[in-house]
Image 1 (cartoon, rainbow, N blue to C red):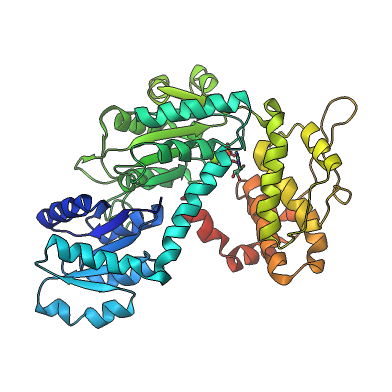
Image 2: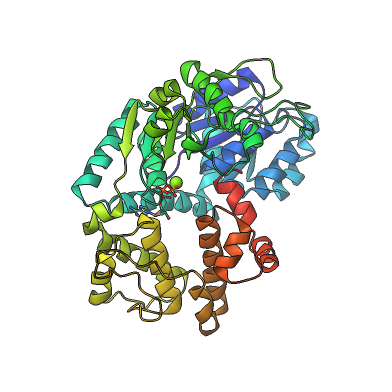
Length: 466
Ligand SMILES: Nc1ncnc2c1ncn2[C@@H]1O[C@H](COP(=O)(O)OP(=O)(O)OP(=O)(O)O)[C@@H](O)[C@H]1O
Ligand SMILES: [Mg+2]
């Protein structure tokens, strides 16, 4: 189903409530932002069908907000609300920034309904709804690949977890699909219209993590020029996914425990208490029980997180899924790299099924990507990570192989492949650029240049807020 999610930017509490009621009655799901910051945070985490911006109340300057919304990609439809004479003059500016329509206060529910309908009925606006459906479909498609009894069970626990709205600890080796599980819990639960906010506790530098999670007041420390909302605040009425929770340092373990106990915290440098309604999901590829036993992880926090535990089995424990996953990745990447004629040969599939995948589904995905880029359907040109006689596995083909064939494919596909190879290397080395450059067999400076050129740093900040 297409999104019914509507972003409302309104600072007046009475108008907010009124607008929320009207929209709900019309069958939409309103998400209310009280400030520009909140609106931008909400926009980066959700697919809205429409935004309604009160020009008079949108903190400081509604036009500036429209500009910033547009920079972030905007919403398929956009309506501004005006109240008095002065804002009327700004309509042309608003229209230039993509506003589809104007509503003047006071307006009737019918006015609102008609304006919304015409704003979202424009054919050129269809992209937003498609994008939303796409995302939903992709998750469904990916979950459908879980064909083993173990993963059926995982899916069943996800359903229960989604309904129960409790804290869930997701365990499993690297690359098994923990992110996918977290997303599914959010998407299948009552918080679906709310934001899904992910924080990778290992990727954010230790001294910045507290402010990343809980925000800071202006002047809280050197360089804190502006008030900053933390991820917990951005995730209000939604889900926060704390990835690599095992890497959370001890001072923050205490603060997190507090939030889990009573949903309250204060920003760094702040005195007032902030209350949020957030569901916490956490993931780890470490053995947290061991970390508790050795004193690295607080036991009280562990029990709070571990209300429900989902362990995602390693791919080698569900080899029947390998052909399905392989085929899925072939279809996806053949299209992306413009090698649509690429097919998986039966003997290749057999070899793929025998391999033990220490890097799990992500490793399988990377092998397929590499085969497609190299046009290597029998894995002849890549040193193949097959099983050797003694049952141990050889190491997978190094990422540097991607460089070889770039000359033979189109420029667009080559750029996409190169970008992917760089991302893989950075992911593998947890963004250690020195090691990634070595892996890619290029100079450190060349890598820095390529990261900048391909905008990878922004991507990283958008996906795992570091
Ligand atoms: N069932 C699936 N269908 C399609 N892709 C999958 C599936 N399971 C995992 N993947 C892909 O494998 C990769 C790894 O999955 P994911 O990021 O969820 O793993 P993870 O357990 O969170 O890994 P890490 O511990 O490194 O964070 C991703 O690119 C994901 O899209
Ligand atoms: Mg993950």
